[in-house]
Length: 272
Image (cartoon, one colour):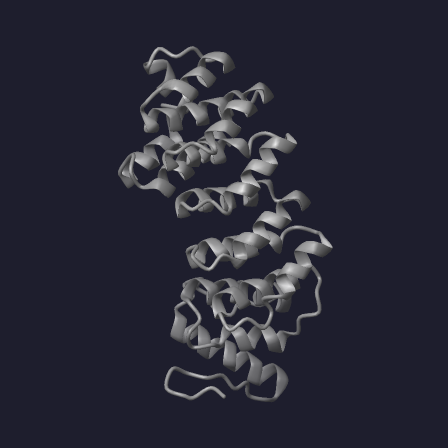
């Protein structure tokens, strides 16, 4: 669990290590506590909190925040909450990523507030933390994130995906708002989430969105895998999910099993 924090934070920032180094950190030492030990910082809340508050090096303070998460002591929360509002976005990313390991109200409120952070990196880290927590307390922040248009589309999709895994009327309400979105990526994520939570989504709606020409490969593949789970058949037997072949398979399954064709627009057709 703590290794996931480590890899996620580094990947989000893209400033501390190459992808190969990230892979090494994901599976082996050094852990955040090991990194702090290299700086002769004792592995206790008091020493790490002091380091987090006072050290001038933002990258080291980032690791100190994750080291506090590794300890898992609620006494670390005040220092992490303070760091979540630091002037250095690198420190804020570390703090927001670390706070997800704590179940206190202060930790949750701080993560939710970070969704509105002016730094896209910090806001994205907050969404990842909320997705990791994934309970009813996450709904408000995830809804805010799904609506934040300056966030990367993949982050907004992540927020909707997480809402689709939470059994809550509020989560379902947030998903329903995107059911007819003009943004195909968000619409497809919402429809899968609604269906996953037992909402009334017909196969025709799932097929229709999966066959949209402008839908991304990752979104089409996700909708298709969801459809496969419903119909109990593989639409791409070799698992490659090659996009052109996949669209043909979807359309052919629909024709064979319903006796009708399903119409969908392409890039060269005008959509009314």
